Image 1 (cartoon, one colour):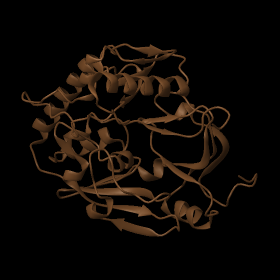
Image 2 (image 1 turned 120 degrees about the vertical axis):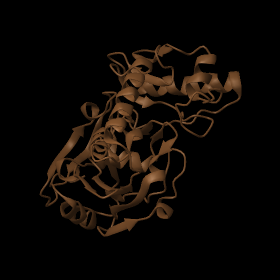
Image 3 (image 1 turned 30 degrees about the horizontal axis):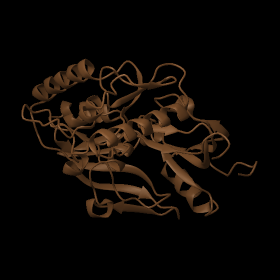
Length: 310
């Protein structure tokens, strides 16, 4: 990185620690943090930046471990200029920085059912990128299109086919930044939708460590789908179940712990390092494989360098 900030209208901060921007509160600095003022500001930066510069779009840090050595990249974090929510008929268009919960609530008020988003931590950009879902519903089920800015600074519209939705993943070229997504929501009664969300929140708070520092589910379900929330939902190939069966509920390394309440939630008990959190996850993967033959895949994204750049 140079010592001269690029000609942007948004906020540019060199050597910016990222620990306070992630839910787990760990991680070293980015080479730079760029918070674009608007889409034009972002497009200009991407177009003019050195092609060798690594770009990492970051949401609200709800599903992320930044390693202790930081990340050798420009981290792009979308803010107030990207949190709009617009409703036209059954069409809901949201900026990437709009919180999932806010989109669900605003849609419900208009009699539109995006209630599955209510309990998903994070913002719409991450929800699209990871094909977020719960209660048997996924972003892919309601997705119409997304707008993104390419590494060359061009505005493009992406279809579901372009993103190739799968369980907890999509295909998006490196350096492309999603700025907005459009959904076609099923209709419903506003009061019933709100009541459903109240029930969902109560269930979440009763079963997940929502008051602890966590990053949501640590590992993807080996079953290849989310919990449906229905009475006939099978738990045999759920990540929490295989972790629990391996005797790892509450297992800890340093300040990192698999939650006693929900063993697929990794928590920072107060002073964990990113290294401890990642070591804990890898030890859980090792022990679950030894006991079941199943290889757990990380759902939490891990980026950057260990201390010393290793």
